Image 1 (cartoon, helix red, strand yellow):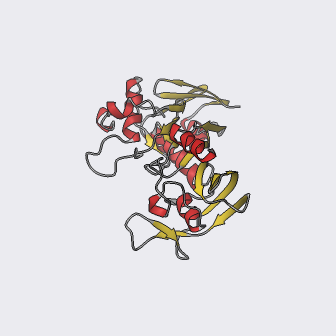
Image 2 (cartoon, rainbow, N blue to C red):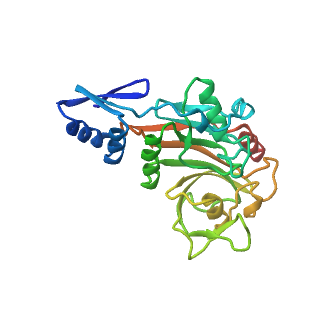
Image 3 (cartoon, rainbow, N blue to C red):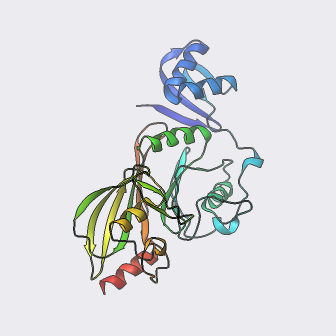
Length: 297
């Protein structure tokens, strides 16, 4: 088991053998954080050692001018809640109607700005970095890295499909199969600027589904992504003849929920330092519960 603690901007680790040279310290650091980051810290005087103690400057204060413009209104929303947090990363619940990050100059009210506000309000001089995204009207957990090295590790975990995401959705119609796997490539729809579609020349996309409940003309479905294409769940289910409730872009009927009925309920990721699996649950939002109550009636 790795023994470590944070000391201000430094990560202090207890290693197996006494370190007697810069070469030994750098080699030990490379085994923990990667050769590239070991070289970077050595060059920036961010690597120190004494006996069996190895210190790495992995938690530097962010310069004030790199902090995203703070947005008190977004940060103070009760539906923007921290679901998990440690020195390395945090997971935050994203409400419906909020973008994960700004997409044009001067845009306010995004989840990224809200997270930066929450961290600054807690006295933390760090700049959040989102690891994945959710559609503007999809609710659920979003993973953020607090530091540059952490972002490198979590980005790699995302590419290697080591970050698991499970969703819950209400779709139109009754699914005939209790469970299954949708393997259909997804590409851009050349007739619409934002819509995607199943296309033979699109990118590989796989979604697993499990039918949980059925109603008169709807189904409650749990979904797990094996890939992470834009609008993947919405495209796959629409193509299968079961668009999401309220998803007007992909053939869903208008509904009082006012958005696509899609919620990220579970997120699992390997801890950046220890590789321990961290699992986070995101409670279903009120409008989702209300929709299910109407369908049950």
